Length: 381
Ligand SMILES: [Mg+2]
Image (cartoon, rainbow, N blue to C red):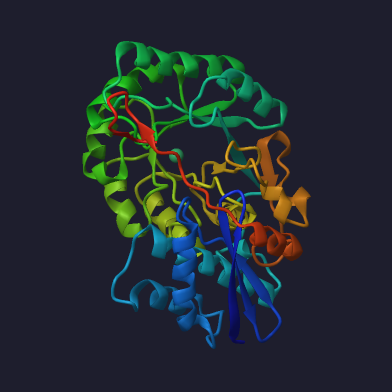
């Protein structure tokens, strides 16, 4: 079997899909995107096409090695995301060629269903309690919220109280049998994170996420030492070697993104590395249906899986929804907060190609907001 074509589709709200065609008639889908840089990733996929056309799509590891290493310069979000989406499509083709789901190729299912969570509150969390109640009504048993909106890197007493009070309001709605996780989005300094996290601990958040920016991973051990709450990180880390120092620093939960961190191939290796550090896997996925399907395949097969992010109803999805691009919408249903295992071949998602081609004609130019502090200097979004 040979790869004959690689197409990309820039689809709202902020995604990029790829379609890998073969001379056997099999088609694999992937989602190579880093939010806000979809055009750059599209160009990277186009450059990688030179390695792919004419190659056997079933030799995934060899192609992964070539895509990540043969161009001498390596790593970074754009290249890692381009490789990630192509890798998803290759696993999709391999599974279809054998008539089995990808999780079977990863050693077989270790669970029957996957617990998922949803975002509440958007970038500036205000009505979080109402949003949490809506998510509980929709069936979810876990939500994630931002600790704060735009905030000083060394928050005031009032700002810190605001963080605690918003979490308390959500905990009240969720009760003690459901979970709420808190995303710091790298908005605080190491010192501020050390001061704020212990104040959240009595409210028992599932984990605190990105308490500091990824460039301060070398200080993460100081945060972990001061945190009674499990620390999670990883949506802005892209490889095993990126995750190793975070795991050595003592993070409890790793959050690689299947569309950023080298796809199914690399995320299953990151999961194994996490397992060797007694850390759990909770993949990041505020993305579309292919990224979610790939995440679920890894979750079905990873023994140290904790919970999966999914974007249905997320605030970013204003122009289009995850389900707009799939034919088998029921496969993403989450009664009781869990998505059931599928034994459909490949990634187990049937993409509505006509809808994707239509959406690509509209395209998008999604960019994250540029935030400023009151003094005019750049603020972390
Ligand atoms: Mg996050």
